Length: 114
Length: 109
Image (cartoon, rainbow over the protein chains, first blue to last red):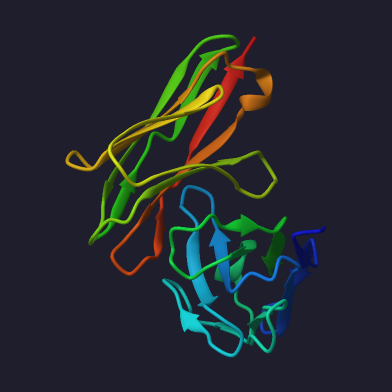
């Protein structure tokens, strides 16, 4: 069982380009999340999905979009990347949407926008 | 506003005990998580407390005081592999996690 996979592992991107970060889980979890992690700051929630077909905005959603076409996949798209989006991006999932369930994290994508 | 405070960095000696503190201010409270994150890796779950008191899990224990808005993670018999960042996260009234910036723990031989 792989758990959660993310792709790519790392990416250098020119400003203004479009980029999709992929996330797939095989645990049949209902809830999925996208976070960004920046030095000196806590994990910040970008978008989340409580179940397939629904998504919601987190703390820092501007410049990002997500979709949840099925249970397993939760891609994050940067429509037009900017240097402030340089960060490490983590995808996570949890069994329920209660917020009190353990979140399981993918290995992360390190994104640099130049 | 909502806020989580934890020390930025701590240093301890192999074999010793260390306590990492976390204070929180959230709109409502539905429990507190501790996660461990090794450099360059994903966070992994350590503990979840929703009731006051101490919960022990092997070398790691986690304590919660809801009235004081305070938690700590206690690590005993420190090993070099315990060198990592420790993230505190409180669950607010909307069942969203509010994350602290993490405490980097350095273990010296």
